[in-house]
Amino acid sequence: MNASALPIVRSVTDLRESVRDLRKDGAKIGMVPTMGALHEGHLTLVRHVLDKGMRAVVSIFVNPTQFGPNEDYSKYPRQEAEDAAKLKAAGANLLFAPGVTDMYADGFSTAITVSGVSEGLCGAFRPGHFQGVATVVAKLLLQCQPDYAVFGEKDYQQLQVIKRMVKDIDIPVEIGGFPTVREADGLAMSSRNAYLSADERKAAPVLHKTLTEIAQGLADGAEAGPLLEKGRAAILAAGFKSIDYLEACDADNLKPISRLERPGRILVAARLGQARLIDNIAALPKR
Ligand code: AMP
Image (cartoon, rainbow, N blue to C red; front, side, top):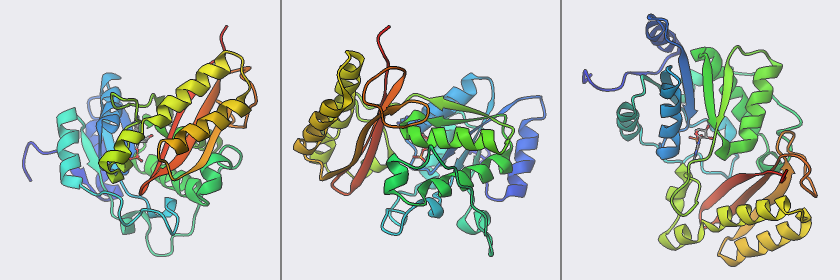
C-alpha cells in the first residue's frame, strides 16, 4: 500500500484494532457514516470532527436493506478510490469500507424499528427504509464504538430516527447534527444530484427557494395549508415530475403543524428526472 494513502479496513476486527491504535495517545474518535460518492457536504462533516480535536473515522457502505425493490441500489454511484483520495486530503484518519457479506453474514436476522418519528414523510414513501437505516447505523456504531458520530440535517428525519434509537437502546455515543451544505444556488449537495441532466440541475434549486418562502410565510404568521399548496405548484411548474411530500412539521416530533408556534421544519421529497431529491429547512417563530 502507498505509505501516504488513507488506511482502509473492511472487517470489524481490523476496524477495532485500528480504532484502538488511533486512541493510543488519548484521542477521541468521531465517526462519519456515509454511502460514498463523497461531496463537499460529507467532507465538511469530516472537517467538523477534526475541528473538535477528534480522529475522524469514515465509513462507506451502500446499505442494501435501506433501499426498496424499485429504488436505485444497483445504480447508486460507487467510487471508492476517488472517495479515499478526497478523505485523505480532508485529513480523515481511517476508512471503514465493509462488503455486504461483512455486514450481513449468512443467517442475519435482526432489525431495529424506531416507531413514531420514522413513520411519516420518507417513512411513508419508503417502507422499511428507516428500519434498514437504524439497523445499519446501530451496527456501525457498535462496530467502531466512537465517542461521537455526526449526521447531516440534509437527512433530517434520519437524524431524528438515529437520535431516538441511540437514546432508546443506550448506545454510548454522542450524536451531532450538522447543517446542510449547499451549492451556491441553494441546491442541497447530494450524491444523487449526479443523476440530474443539465436542464434538471437548473430546475433543482426551486426546492430550497420554495422551502425558504414557506418558512418565511410561517414566521410571518401565515397558515401552512395555502403556503404548502403554492409551494407544490411552484415545484411542479419548475419541471419536477411529482412530489412525494411537502410538509410543515414540528421540528422535534415531525408531526404536521398548521401554524408556527414553536420551532418547525419544512420538509420535501420530489422527483426530478431519474432523481428523488429531498431537502428541509428550519422555520423559527419570530420572538
Ligand atoms: P449519505 O452518503 O448520503 O448517506 O450521507 C452520509 C452523511 O452525510 C449523512 O449524515 C448525511 O445526512 C450527510 N450529508 C449528505 N449530504 C449532506 C449535505 N449536503 N450537507 C450536510 N450533510 C450531508
